[in-house]
Length: 85
Image 1 (cartoon, rainbow, N blue to C red):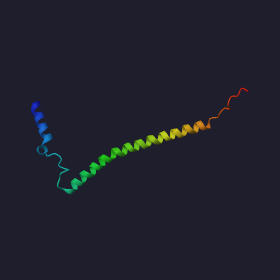
Image 2 (image 1 turned 135 degrees about the horizontal axis):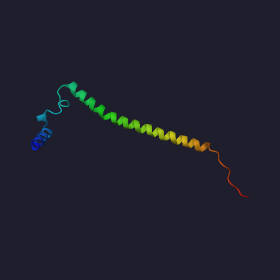
Image 3 (image 1 turned 135 degrees about the vertical axis):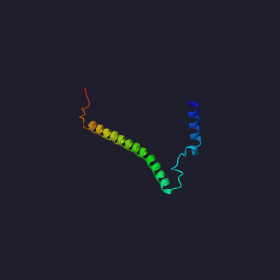
Image 4 (image 1 turned 45 degrees about the vertical axis):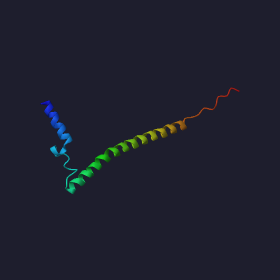
């Protein structure tokens, strides 16, 4: 039984006509093809935009922290140099 299932899986994987796979991307209907292309572009761009947004947010947080740290350092009172003479 296991061997038969494996054989059927391999046939369906390498001979898509048997399983009638990917009926959308090769559909002669133009509306379905356009919808497939739009969905592909959308699903490609959304993760990239999400990663870019996270990068920009982290960058802004680090810059704000650096500015705050520089502000705190410039506001600290400085002691005059210690002179023994």
